Length: 294
Image (cartoon, rainbow, N blue to C red; front, side):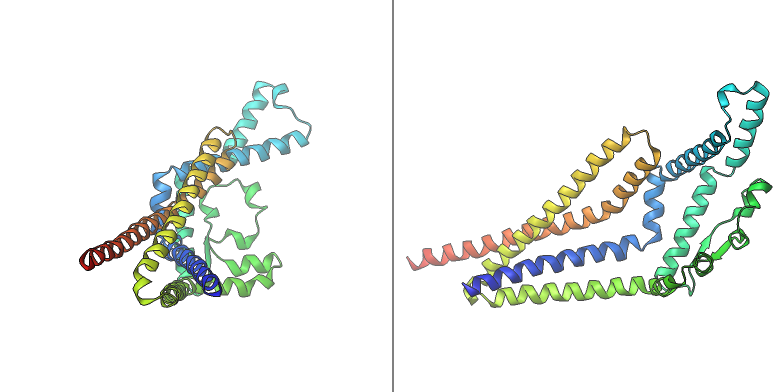
């Protein structure tokens, strides 16, 4: 009884450490890799969706301010409408796919370099002075934000968030922590697998390993399939939604989950097939041995 409970605990713990290993593997080789985002964003029309979302939000903000001043676009004269449309176009002229792409890609490089401890400071790229903003809009922006490259520490200090500075500094070591986590979780998984096998008699270990691998792989494969199905269902619902920001979030979720689904699926299939092979090989050997004894 106690032996069965111990085996169950070991197998479940091995499953958890394996899941942790696969997740950290995804983080280190995909989520901390700038190339992953550049490839994914360019293939999924991400930059255009961001541009459209920002434009719509900006237009809604301008229209809201306009209505608060008790002005109605529908009641304007053609001349007033022309002036208003010109002002709106001037405010939104800097929002285009090229500027959005440049902003995202450059910041991705800066953030990735910081997370890999290749830079001592987290630098945010914000080329406001090159966007051709109207003077009245520029005058409302703080001077420290008008630098092309802004130290994140300056933003936190200006916002009164000095308490967050230690956490920002620790982010420099994210890739190191992820790599250490990969090594530790993989080592723990192997140790737990070994302990699980040692709890079986010598002649039963191959079958035990086959069962453990098969169940482990099947559960992880089901998790991958469930995640893939859920994201597709959410994406289909988001496509029919008129809110661009929601569609953008769903698309980003799909991009982020794709490598996890692939890695989990590859491991799940490999573990499942390996387990079945090991289990059947042992069973066949036993049948041959029994046939010879007869």
